[in-house]
Image (cartoon, rainbow, N blue to C red):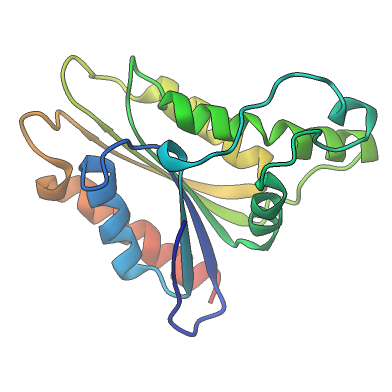
Length: 193
């Protein structure tokens, strides 16, 4: 986990699903982070020691998550965050396995709300940053999955940015994707100032 703070009250939590520290997803994250105000923390799914959901069903019975591995701290950070970001390269048109494994643990939050008969207030901002090369042409499947995950974490205002064709035009040079990432940060700065 990496953190940055500039004195503003907005807290942004980024879930980075890229295996490459300086890859295309990181380029979009960096430009977003330069614009967003407040505290920014990043959780790296590839370097995380968190386990995926094992479908034990304890959370369905109201007992919370049975796995004790630090995810409880992340649940608290999700509660605190005003802006949530999912960033990932596309593998077979969807999010990377480690990011999906980490996000599977939000099942416990979903079950807690369902058992209480309440849903999240959709008050958070959400951003999806996707990159893809090779034969990737359509990020819509990954966007749909990401929106479901972000809504389960309480995001109502969800923005999407994709840099597709990164084997020919790296995300760090994709002016349209960079512009959209900056625009999302500025919008969240206004919404959550």
